[in-house]
Image (cartoon, rainbow, N blue to C red; front, side):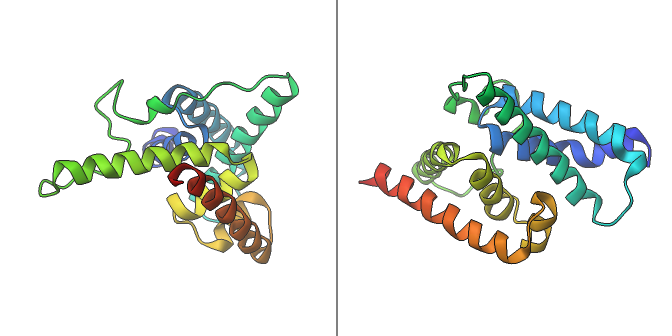
Amino acid sequence: MSEQQFLDEHSQLVFNVALRLTGNRSDAEDLAQDALIRALKALPRFRGDSKLSTWVYTITVNTWKNRVRAEKSRGFWKTISFGAFGNQDDDEPVYEPKGDDAPLDSELEKEGTATVVQKALLQLDADDRAIVVLREIEERSYGEIGEVLGLAEGTVKSRLFRARAKLKTLLDKVSA
């Protein structure tokens, strides 16, 4: 596979995961670029033990976790820009395309809900956020999440259960 083919097939996947993990477009672009560069450099060593997309997810999540650890160890954590989740800088949609028949108020309500969920998601710690993003947003299987995060399938299930409970608690606080 050529570098261009690899980028064509995986850059959007990497960016989408990065956007969900970081919460803003600027950090997602930086993370996606770093993850893709790492993946391209390591591509000749890819053994095929897992799907290529699983391997790319692993590199993306690990690159993000390394950044989180580095920023925390330097004694600061950036303020997350929640407004960056919309279509502000370009024409690329972040959310699924909207249907023509949906009433405007229901679309606004969906966007409001998505913003609230994203804010709550960003309050989870790195491990919980990664597992929720991979399962609930990226719709990866428990086995694939286990491969990406280096966990047994049973551990993935139990951690996901706890992460969902934390997320529900955060969301309940907002709706109360």
